[in-house]
Length: 355
Image (tube, rainbow, N blue to C red; front, top):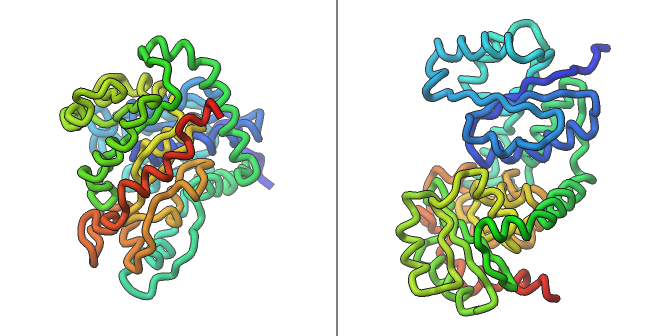
């Protein structure tokens, strides 16, 4: 029997949500194997996700500029072999780039994620769908490490990690509230209304109605998250309302994570923000359209009851939301979800800290 590895080189480049989903698994891996070291290789932007985790080292690799193309990947592999004393490789991405890199890394044990493409196709095909919850991405990541001889138990310990991160954020709450100039509020509500693909995004006119319903509660403070390019629309929503603040484009990524950690609840799409909030134990109400929680991308430790979705025969129509619904078109699967339904899901979290 081969000895368990002492230092694992891990790859996961994009997307942000998928990279965020590696964090709780890596935390448990290191907690359950005290002698293990891990080096996470990802794009430099993701670095704040992996800070302050004992025995986890981050290696930023800019694959679009510094390590672009085949020559760049050869250079990256050479530098990794020199800089990191790894004795095993875990590929949590399994795309062309990582296939090339792992071939260049030499004769060490390598384990690769099984993305379950076949069963996901059965769940998303237009007809004769095989409807059932699939293995979570967290478990798929854990399975990779099991292949290397360092199994990770995640099912019974999921809530433990959530409570630990939530306690840390509470200890820092007063300091961060001052830093971000957050006024006292009975409820802090984060809203991230955007997604990469239209089939995953709640119609913005309906989302604005949700904001209006929440804004009427003077005891709540609403924070609107998005990119710098999306900020002008959010500024329109916030205009004239002192209990709405636009966070989009205002902070560096590390600071935005700290702000998200202070929310009492987050409203998101099936997007990276759902996973970012989950890392800090923040309850998430998520709205689902062309995709579905059963595909394995639901937030870490989140209550399935907090997913807002409709029971349509066409759902799910896509794994990643990058295809329009063949029946209802772009975001069509969300048209039947009313702003009042979303508000009702959020309402149980409002003023909770005073109950």
